[in-house]
Length: 383
Ligand code: ADP
Ligand code: MG
Ligand code: MG
View (cartoon, rainbow, N blue to C red):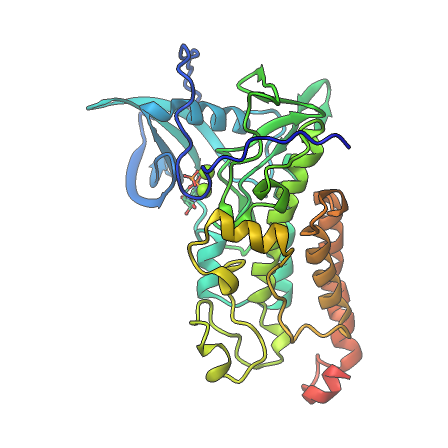
């Protein structure tokens, strides 16, 4: 397949992208009446501004605030949220957008429903999961991605496929009922075959940096290498999302308590040395993807060597014995989706289907081993 090599730019990680080229501001029409909005504390800070909790018409909301010079990013995120058929419980609910005057000029607001348990990353730091709970979180997060990726044409009203381009556990939120939804469409892009669009304009592969955005730790090998197939960017950018979602599934799976059969699940961020020392487990402690290998602030060169050249992936816990069909299926789902070859990765719909089978597989396995009654010995479980 034809691969266009795009320039590898060193603009990864937390560094903001350069401001977009100066263009005439496109007309802005508010989509929401914010006269009643009361803003509260800051609940998140990102690359282009802050997110504050608020109350609007008696409802708790989250308000993403962009300074005037990031208007372009605000408009781009607003346009994606405003596409037809974007309503899904697995995407954060979007109420509307507006601008308001400040002392320095103007700022732009995106208003979303407030998701009470915060990011998946923070949730996993504080909690371990039962198998069924993990399945529900994985299922709802992947459902959000599948919804974005799937073009919908109902009654001639079209939602194009959308690539998220920054899937990670800080861009997935946890609701009070334990389900997940995807947020942060700041890099999301409408894609269709070899065409991709931003604010209604078709962009060209030669002039647009399509693939080198996102969060360094979650970048697929082909992104790190600067070799994304831009001729079929719909497929290529979806594959990049799937790689990142596989890492998120690994994060979820690492915090699942059931396979440990009552042993303590290793805490989220033990120092590496403490991993085996105190507990004696053969299980790696939970960390961010690749944190065990290259720490908390990886460089692009480290990521390239590890992920692209050496094809290393986060380790799955030893305790995931192959004899358990549910764990085996989850492991295979993760491994298939972080395959070095993008073409070999699962699609979001396929990942969704595989995850939806896990709860029943797990119940059957438990039933066969009598785990619903008194716990069998560890030997019996492993045999
Ligand atoms: P950025 O593009 O700057 O990363 P995000 O949209 O990811 O901005 O928001 C930054 C952070 O704000 C998130 O990681 C999360 O902690 C918090 N946040 C964003 N939206 C919500 C929401 N709807 N409910 C609760 N917290 C949110
Ligand atoms: Mg974010
Ligand atoms: Mg973002």
